[in-house]
Image (cartoon, rainbow, N blue to C red; front, side, top):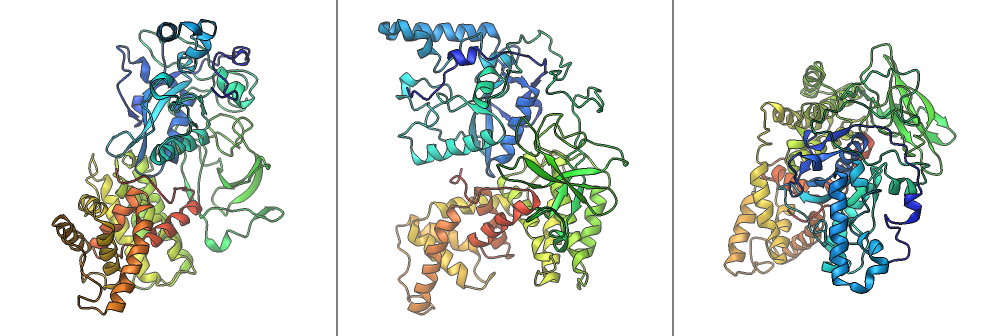
Length: 580
């Protein structure tokens, strides 16, 4: 065991004061997170966590690559059950290692926490893993709740000797959960917590805010956190609302005006091309507010934009003093009532669909002569469609390639700015794509975009092709005019030829010179690994567009689109897991 690992039984953990804030336990099964039943109990206690733990889980889910999802295994654990787990595991270790009696408690604590300080009994800890879009668990190196004895210590989060895939998957989980404000217990890659004694020790907090709690037999959430350091500011309303809704009002930021606001020397006031109000729903007299530019450490402040009916103004506010971030789930550190959820799901808006329709009408015009008006229409068409999908609860149900299609539409807004070329054609293409996307909320369960399911099948065929056949198919696709050689047909033909044991035809043996053929295959050889590194949904959506004759399959275009998204407040990884 590493000397740097702090265990739950460490005296420093037990010495942390406890000031339980009395916050509710909430059921994660009501949120859309995927929940696994291996720890299911009669009362359903396993699915409960504290409110702000759930908030951070939702935020972590939003940070994962497209097509990768959290799988919730266990949260709250009644103190009596935790005590039984600890005693049973201690007995097992004592029977297997009689010479460990002097250090048996410490050894048991590597996997099971002592009941008096266990974060699970406080509703402060979660056991999670990752799954793909089909619900299949990703390779994490060990199963959840594996013991060091059965795997040689590979349950430790940063253990050496993992496969590349398992190490990548653990890094993906660690990045998302850490960014959401949860702390990992280093002997268990699946175990994360917030608000407990261990969290307080690791983050330098003066006290834990969650302690052991019993789940009432007929549990009905009744209260919010009343800890003096975590309550709303005195001037704010203290009316309890079980699920405050976010305002979610959007403001397009014209490209020409982004650099016009400067609130600190050398720091432009606006980092984004769109702003979305981060406050709770509020009346018309209250200005909207959103982070316009987070400032990097050691700077602890953030530039906020405030707007009503006119152009936004700017002010610098300190970041949340507990999280160090410009947005948080606490009722403190914000100008006004802050949104109590990282997920930032927009509120229903009866005018949103009409605004999307008005924007599409502008984009349909053959001549787009007003660059600023066109850009605003493109912004509203793509971004408000994304907001509506989330507000209706449809977004979480979409397949990875349909989510990628939404992100693609958002990325195309930039092409319609003042510097964009081919504005009329780009506007009409975006209008076509957005109309298809609006059909996703037409029924209770979205049927998906045209050609999506077929494209997923074609990608799986392509991924199984030998490298030489992949090179041939992609090379032909890049040099033959779009539409004259259907990509899906080429992939199916290549799959049949490869299955029959045939090698690709020699360069120059078809209706193309040897030089041109070799040049095409070189381009195909360069494109294949780039394509494989894209997130899964982007690969499938790229094939879908190529099969429909809309755009050639290009990893470079996808990477450029992904790199554009942070300007709209969306951060995605440029690479993703292998095909699920």
